Image (tube, rainbow, N blue to C red):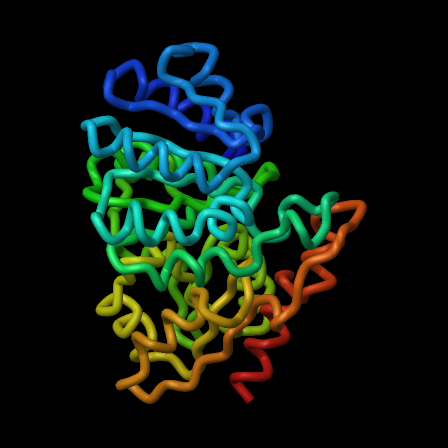
Length: 308
């Protein structure tokens, strides 16, 4: 079973718009890709196509939030986080306005357009901002639950979405606990804290390692900020090795957040991610993931090495 987070975003945004007349949507010329155009078709009077002017889009969203609306702002993650950073910082985060930012086609998932369109730094950019909530769902099912919760979260939220179809690895019927690290598979030898697409790859690695008698605990960290520090410490307290995995730079992302949480525990952590490099174009998504070592096989190799 697979799901597409972009399609979920568009569908659920339409449903939210039906339930709440205060929800509006703003787009930076990429509505057909982010799927915000579905909201535009349903509620044209509440849909604002801002063109390739991300800074202006965030400023307009801030103004709408000041008048009581709940703006959902979407574009590619690399543009949502980088181009309007000053406006997000000064006009949204400092006054803690109720603006919801969707970073679509995150990580390397826009494999065809190359490094200019691939966000290897968006978690770091958003995580450092006071008052910002950062969400990174593992699949479409979790993305839907996050979307439904976002209007209730006070203040700015950044939602990071993959471009491609992903396997469903979370419990479709289970409850989503905001701010909690979720145990997906238990194991007593090592733990891997993963986010986004890397949760599925961690589960694949855990299955391969089990054949060797190695029990890998897989924890889905979909709420990156606020981080479940207590949960992270608990899941790391009784294993021999700790890893993180993310489709993001090893600098400033999930791995950094986990290391901060475990700093007083003095537990060594191996961070698996993009090693301080930009992306590149490729013919297929998996080709890029393999190029940057973001595979189940790479997880298996790292776990073996750590347990030595």
